[in-house]
Image 1: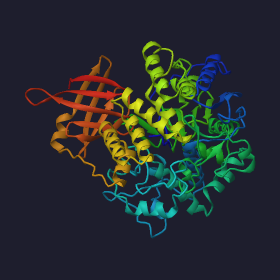
Image 2: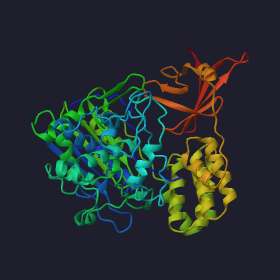
Image 3: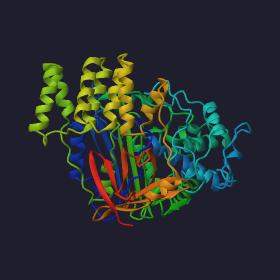
Image 4: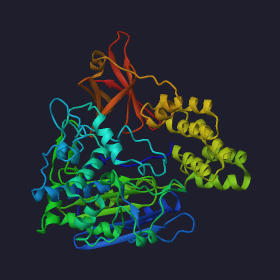
Length: 569
């Protein structure tokens, strides 16, 4: 399965702000260079703000083939950083008295739209802006005709239908659950209230005042000329046209423009203007949960009480922004690859943060071997290299997966199929290789083998909605598991997996939750009576009983690791 992104999760770090040089360190520059040279990212551009000083650094190209060097004027998709623009627009309306954070969203939607309620409580604008509306991450009627541009055909009618027919599964305002559809809906409500499109609101209220001429939803001719082409792995991919849910992730911009935006946010409390005052309101804490170890402003994630951040990703791009208003520092990092660049921003904001050394991708070497010596000898080369040169190359599961999709894009289906088979053989406990192999089989017209591998992928990772959806489309029955409240209660407690690392299991309203040391709380879902999986990462836990039938341990399976833990409370 190729990555289908719209948001990267908030970073779970303890940020410690220290004085540092205003310049971008050589270590960061070399790290960026190594990411590009090893084809993890195609191009990366950084803007770092320290007080009145701004430093830029760029490396790489606008495309793998026939690209030109990226720079601070190159145009990228910023994905979910768009949500902070939506929050700023809402704050402008609140400060002007036109709207209130406590307004129910039904006040602004057409009367034909039936907004879901729960226990007599209505969803408000504040709930949408803080991801506490109890709406899901994505609408359940989102079925793109083109996975490479998946939001292009999602209409306002689709959105209204989803809202009118969705049944809330948790209490409104009780907890944070990241919702793209919720923030997209908020952007549309701003359209309805103002009588203007979301893009017009962004341009009029943010882009023009800050002279951000290359920040738009729809590419201007100038922006097209400066566009850094998006890449899915090693393959160039389509841009995402997000209009109906534009408030959740539809903006394109440049590092030059985004630096202006970050600077305005840094100065929100020191400059008296409508825009700066709105930004200041958007920065205020609006939701905090000790259980989830989470704090939200309006769209912005808050770390350690004052650090503001938001990142984002679309099919061919990743982005990261962070602000420390107290020290007047900020950063924005944009890349034209769907490979996360958060670490670069973190390093600039937190100098003690360690950057993981980059190894050359085995996929790049293997691609040359295939071209020169053919697939059979290339596979033999891979196996020998993995044995004798394990420390010289990156052999992680996504390397072969990325190469397989590159070969599919080049219409080399037979070779791609062999690469996906190799990936399954090398990583038999990972879900994604089976999903990718199944996709290749399906594209090759081998439906039975596709079904077999989609099932295996789903067994390993029940959170794989792609496999679930494809199997349903092929009329394959999917087993749904329910676990009694009594059995859920038997799993609650604290499990020690390491001297300083434990997992606490709790229940609420017939649902099971997991919280690791220093991490937010996440819901876990059953795939068997004693096996549960997470949706935020590919991981699962298994509860184990002793000879007397009492649950006395659990095992965490994640990233190829098997971590047992004894129940201590």
